[in-house]
Image (cartoon, rainbow, N blue to C red):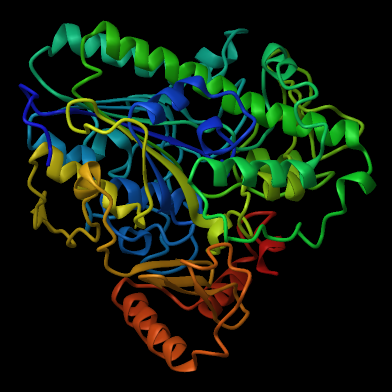
Length: 546
């Protein structure tokens, strides 16, 4: 039961980070120093089987609306990928958490990445202020330089010039500091009103940008290499009770060599060190946000939720990718640094990542480490693509400290949970538009005890599809056939049981098909036809068809 100790509706702080693997942070078995997230876990709850939707924009749309992404107009990304359901723009058949909570007199704040509007330069009805937020500081686009990001916006106004003229600007810090300032300002201006704050980091999404002092902390931390580190992470996950000891560690990605045979190891280590530094910097900022909550006397009555938008990203930035593709077409980079030097794009092993004039990614093998012990990555809906850490902290509403919850859940459950704790009604109509029913199930029962009663979970992204019913998961890596796994015995998806249980496969596939039709999922073959006709939308789309 939710505590009645609070004298007003609880504040809600929703923190989402970008492209981080299941086991990167300290309290989920990782080597990266995250004392502030670890503190929240120690004094709250960790969930071992919570799921996102495998990609940036769809996860944000689902998280903020309580629907499946296709229902919201975000079927793939915010570039146009076809007809209704894939328009790349948040539609009017959904409401955001901010819109719902404003009905309960919440003040609403957003600091960070938006990435659910197709128009990146002109305010539309899919921008934050038009979707329930009173205040917005952040970026409309999904990725970019941490030193000088494109589409930096305050309210509805572009303020890229502020970053360009400030040699100390770093986007992760800016997100954190603005979030902390929002909390302090709220206490002064609206002391009797609850707030909803959405903090959406771009860290640790590529490019690999970080401060030298943060990178230096991880010198030598990963020298053992990905093979040994994957085994060490699994051991810690088992020891902490997050992973069952009977679940087998997945094989190293077959495209990657053993660490002992890897070339360019100095460069490879630097990539992982910068990636770790990106998460470390985020955690430092979360510490400042928590300090603002403590200073305002609000931390006990604030429901804090932390999670990641998808599994770790295995994309390589191709050598020689042109500025035109990244800067002019996709708007996810700038051609020059703030002081006029050209940005060097691509995973050039002679160029150490981290500084402003680089644009690189950490690659498949380290992403394989980040997703320990699971298979695959961002884009796919095997566990490596969709499993996320989930930390929930609320002293006045959760009595247990340091508890683990193994009941499955997914992003629409966040809206359902916030509806219950806030008492906000979920509308059938909003601003003259019919609103689709919330698809989530509240996590509030799990605040007091573990439970397993949850309806089916569904996923689809770029033809990759899955349904989970109880312990059974039916999953497909497009265009491969369905696989069936017993998630109680084999959550690492090592033993395909589809051949042993053909009737179960058939039944679950029918349930998936009914869901896909109801939610407007367009068959992947149709999407590929449209993309071929349009010439594709991004340099990595073609790579990820295989």
